[in-house]
Structures are given as structure tokens and as C-alpha cells.
Length: 217
Length: 135
Image (tube, helix red, strand yellow):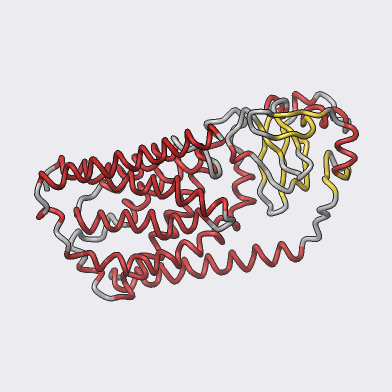
């Protein structure tokens, strides 16, 4: 596939993911719901798998994580935004690792048990891995520094919270696999590029305007 | 072992890890008889009212938080040479963060037992503080 198409797709889906984290994730967080597990199990894993299915390009999900993480940095509300941005970027990298050995035509994932299992593995690894990475890196970037004992004490909580993400991932990946036969390459350039740019701009504008509105209040 | 066997086994192991961790977390929360009415600071128990009566107030207008100054609190509970120690703050759920004296000078403890720092990310905000350990 044309590299420009992949770059545009990375920015589009990364922006959609970041928008979901900032707007929907903040609402979940404010409502007292387990926002992290829901966002990883449904949105992060869902968006990354959809792009893997549509574009069949390795490395794209890492790029999406970087775009979504950058967008999360623009929204300093709903929990620790630096931690969230780091976690999102880590999730993109972890998705790439988990799916590295899975072929791009998904021949291994014909049976429902295989898709559900991949959903469980992907969501759990992304959630727990992202959480651990952020617990290590956030203190390192601060003046307090990182203390291993703080992570070890909290590890059972992290492993426990990942269970919901795993269950959600086990449901969302078999559903997302239904999009396997959609051919993104069939969309004409004059439709594809304006659409991707417009939606991406809309996502970034919505997050930035939302941030400015909250700051004014 | 082929992928067809390995992937479901890995998923099952993950579900077992998640489930057993959840059981462990709930079991330890039920079994630990944590006194949530007081905060253990430097191995002594204080009620939040006592803390507010001994330490200087501090307000973070930008963050909309008010409480008592953590550095003053540490001095008032009798810690000597506070700048040479680190401080581990533990919340009800076991979440804990270790900070330096410089951070304590930019931190406060609210009436709701939450610590907030102006110089650290939100990840360092510990809710339901039960212990401040001096190391």
C-alpha cells in the first residue's frame, strides 16, 4: 500500500484513539468507572486491531500510539495525563510485540477461540505492560525518582485490574475481526485523503477546545 | 508447540493470573485491619484533626486544594534532619509513592487525607493516606 496512505491512516486512527482517551476516557474516569481497563480493552485494542486488519502494515500501531499519546498530553484532565500519555505510547509498542508473529493475512485466527484468546492476551499485556511502564517512567521524569518497592507493592493491584481489560479484549477482537475483508485500498485518493485529514483535524480541535473550555470554567 | 495450542494456553494463564491477583487483593484488603481513622506518621498515630491542629496550613490556589504543609507536618512530628530522609506515603488501597524532602516542601495533606504536590505529576497524589513513613 502507498506509504502516504499508511501515514494518513496512522494519524487518523491515532487521533481517534487519542480523542476517545481524552473525551470518553475522562467521562468514564469522572463517573468512577474503571476507565483505564475499558479504554485499553475496548478502544485501544479495538482501534489497533482494526488498522492491522485494514492496512495490514506492521509498525502502524506504534505510530498510532505516539499520535494518541501526543493528543492525550493536550488534555490535562481526568487523571494523570503524563502517565496516560506514556501508557498509550507503550500500548502501541506492546501491541506490535504481541502481534509480531501473527501473519498479516491472519490465517492463524480462523477459529473463534483463537481470536478471543488473542484478545485476552493483547488487552492484558497492553494494560499491565502500559501500567508498569508508566509507573516506572513517570517517577523517572519527575524530581522524586523511581523506587522499585513502590511498584512491587502495587503489582497485585495492577495484575488484578488487567482482568477486566483482558475480558473486554476477548470480546472486542472477535467482533473487530468481522472487518477483515474490508479493502481500504479500494477507496479513491480524492475521498480518502480529505476524509482522513478532516476527521483527524476534528479530533484534535475537539480535544483542544474541550481543554480550553475547562480551563475557562 | 504450535500457535493453535500456545495462544489459548497463554490466554488461560493470563486469566488465571488476573483472577488470582483479584482474589489476593480482596483477601488482603479484608484481612488487614487498617486503622483508617488515624494516619501513622513516623510510627505515631494522629487523627486528621490533630494533624490540622499542629501543622501550618497550605493552599494551592491553582489546583484548588487546601490542607496542611507536609514539610511542616514532618518537622512538627519530630523528624530530625528532614532533608536527609525520603518519605513513603501509603494510601488505603496499598498505593504508595516515595518522595524527597524537596517534594514535601511543595506538598500538602487535605482534610480528605489526600496528598497533593505542585512539583510532581498526578500519579503522586495518594488518596486515603494511612501512613507516612520516614526512611
